[in-house]
Amino acid sequence: MHIEQDEFEEIRDGIRQLCKQFPDEYFREIDAKEAYPETFVDALIEAGWLAAMIPEEYGGTGLGLTAASVIMEEINRCGGNAGAVHGQMYNMGTLLRSGSAAQKEKYLPEIAAGKLRIQSMAVTEPTTGTDTTKIKTTAVKKDGRWVVNGQKVWISRVQHSDLMILLARTTPLSEVRKKSEGMSIFMVDLRDAIGNGLDVRPIPNLVNHETNELFFDNLEIPEENLIGEEGKGFKYILEGLNAERTLIAAECIGDGYWFIDRACRYANDRVVFDRPIGKNQGVQFPIAESFIEIEAANLMRFDAARRFDARQACGAQANMAKYLAAKASWEAANVCLQTYGGFGFAKEYDIERKFRETRLYQVAPISTNLIFSYVAEHVLGLPRSF
Image (cartoon, rainbow, N blue to C red):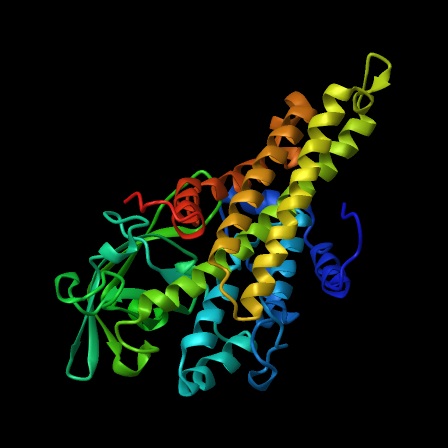
C-alpha cells in the first residue's frame, strides 16, 4: 500500500518472493512455540540479504543502510518479524565503520558467506538502563588479554549468534575528563565465551523475542578483539544506535502497512447491517488517518537512512524517525484490531501477534521520553534535563 514505487522495487520484490515461502501460518507456529525462525533466517542468509551492507570485496553486496532498511521493512510488511535478524545489519555497520582492516578481513567474509552471525550487542545494564555512561561492566587488560566482569540485561539473540559486540568501561568513571570517555567496545566470540566466563539466562517476555540477562565472571577476551581506539567506544556505539533506530523505524513502517492492508481488506469484506463496514466513516477515517501518519513517518525514515549513508549527522533524524514510525505502527495496530473487533483477538488472523510485536517499539530500543529529551536538548537548545 505505497502511493508510488521507489528505486528499491527489485529488493522489495525479492523479499516478497522469499517471504511467500513463509506464510502467516509459519510465523504463527513459531510464535506459539516461542521458537526462533531458524528456517526463515537461513533462507535470508542463503539469499544474501543479511550481507547487504558488507562491501563486495568481502563477499557482500555493498549496499547502504537505506537499502538495508527496505529489507527490514519488507520482512515486516509481509507478516514476519525482522527483530530476529536486524542485529546483523547495525552490528555489521559498527564493525565496518570502527573495526581494523585485520578485523574486517577476519570476520566479514565469514559473515557474508553465512558461516558467522553477528546478531548481538551488549550495552544495557540492570542498574543503568539508558544512562550508558554509568555502566559498571569493566574490562581490564591483563597479560595480553582483556578480563571482563559485570552484568548486562535485555541482550537479544545471544543464543542465535556467534559474535557479540560488547561495551565495557576500561577507565573508571572517576578518572575520565568527560563521562562519555573511558568506555571501549570488543568483539566477543560467543562460541568460546558461553560457559567460560559468560553465563546467559533467558528472559521470558510478552513477545516471542529471544532476549537475555548476561553475567560476566572473569571472561577473557583476546587483546586484538578491541574494536577501534580504547576509551572511544561510546562514540562508536552511538553510530550503531543511529543505524538501529533507523532500521527499527523501517520495521515499524512495514508493520504499519501490514495493519492498514489487513484493516482495509476486512473492512471491504465484512458485511454488517447489509453493508460492508468500510462504507462507514467511523471505520474509514481511523484507517485513513493511520495511513497518512505511516506515510509521513516513512519520509523521515528515508531522510535518516540517507544521511547515515552519506556519513552526515543523523542523530536527530534517526530518533525522530523511530518515534514517528513506532507511534504510527502502534496506532495502526489499534485501528486494525478495532476494525476486526472480536475476531482481531483470534490467533488465526495474526492481528494479536503483530499487535504484541509492534508494541515493543514504544519502549525499545529507546523509550519515547528519551527521544523527546534528545530533541529538546540537541535540536531545540533547551537545558539538559538529567
